[in-house]
Image (tube, rainbow, N blue to C red; front, side, top):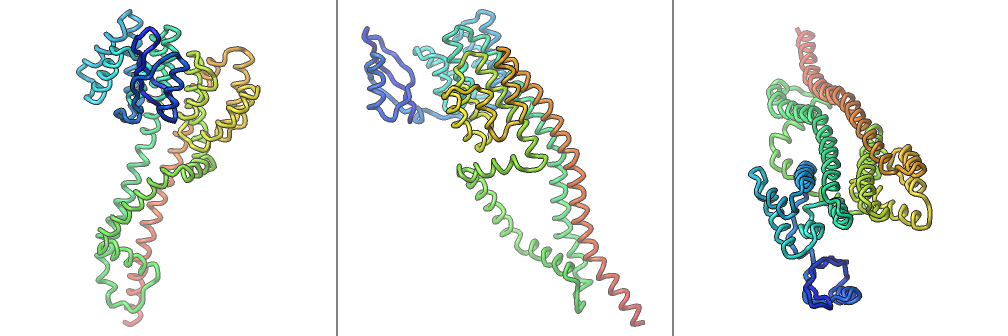
Length: 399
């Protein structure tokens, strides 16, 4: 099914523009006739210019500034004009804001104008803005979105900062190994030229060293090819599904990922539910923000259970990939009538737990990487020093 940007006329002869999902233009025509609209022209949304997804920081700043101005009584078009004219706004963002302004002036709703920007704005924001337009609380929803994306940005920032040291250490390990095989080992090669027999480990070390120095370009091209191939394979849905399932089974890392996925989903569901978006729609969009294909695919069954009359807590209890206490928290929220608050509280708690889990994982990862480097260096040293001492013993015995 495709999304179409259409222009139509109503019975009063007034032009109407908007978006509608349909398999083709014929189905679009029939849908609009059911709404007493007469199709004039249509264009597939995918033919509209696409944009790269704005990151959480930009979305938070956009929502915060927009919500603050709307709350102060500034009209929407004027608020967007101010945002587009800011000196700190990047050219790509400026172009997006100006296109949104252009569509607003043509009578298209704010949520549809956001959706017309391709992938720039997430579905979560689009649906929450669409609901806010109906309820008339665009300022409140904008500020709620600002909080949502600020927390998402902070969590991602903490993950990146926590992994910075292990990443640097990994680069150092690679550099040390490269120096050993390309510079240090060749210095000892002449010592063993006349040796009749060398230990297997020594021959392997020198073989690797020779291969790196002689075929470094081919090795580099092969490594680049492998990386491209892996990236392409990850784009295959069936492979991505299996890899995402495997992630959850990994020791230590799997537990951390479950916490992160649950926190992300809980915050998204809380934001959408509190904004008045129907539960089915909230689940459909919320599942897409998790970032795990294995968990996402299970939501088809979750939605079926809810449509058959089961409670949300029962339906979420079947999901493999969330922490076990999540369904219990949702049950408490259902019984107390404070589901939105419980989901938000759960997300905050899981954010804290994920930070602690990341710190714990990094604290284990750092010494492990040092041990790996020590083992590699030690193996090289033993492989080189052993034959040297052996030659000394042979000389001594001959004397």
